[in-house]
Amino acid sequence: MALLLRTLARRSTCLSRPQFGVFYRHAVPMGTTAKEEMNKFWAKNNKLNRPMSPHISIYQWSVPMMMSITHRGTGVGLSGGISAFALLALVLPGNYPYYLDLIHSLSIGPALLGLAKFGIAFPLSYHTLNGIRHLFWDSGKGFTLPEVYRSGYVVIVLSILTSIAAIAYM
Image 1 (cartoon, rainbow, N blue to C red):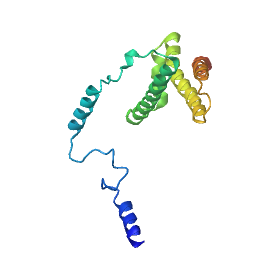
Image 2: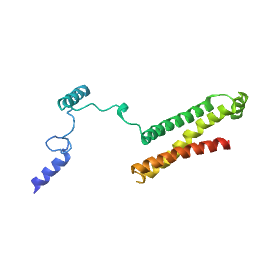
Image 3: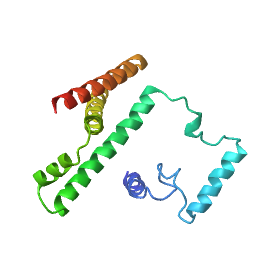
Image 4: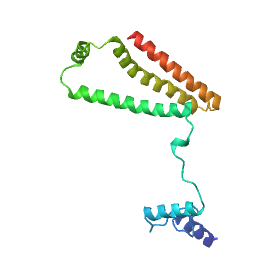
């Protein structure tokens, strides 16, 4: 019995040894470099006639794919814009009313001003509404293909409508 307990104790503490560890089977040996491992990977794939991973150009574009890309882009754009605005507010002399008067003195036409407002309002509303869509997905709802497309179209239409409403209100 004591021999059995010692053997079990030794095995549980020696998982790093290949003869005892069940998790060690797929680990890379310590003496290889990344280049050697990469060469082994490609040699194995060539031997098995495996194709290279396809490039994005062969995929058929879909609404969920475009919405995912746009969601990431609006997130990066919004965080970059907020960061730039905060940095400029810290380093530029003067205060907010001075720069607001400066923008008013540029005499920008209403069409260009409306386009600029839409350029700010649309990413914000799209990212917010698509984030709400993702929260529904996190709860496990809306994963069938028709629901994914329907919720995508709803997000696009609501984003455009709320952006136009925000521009009309401002």
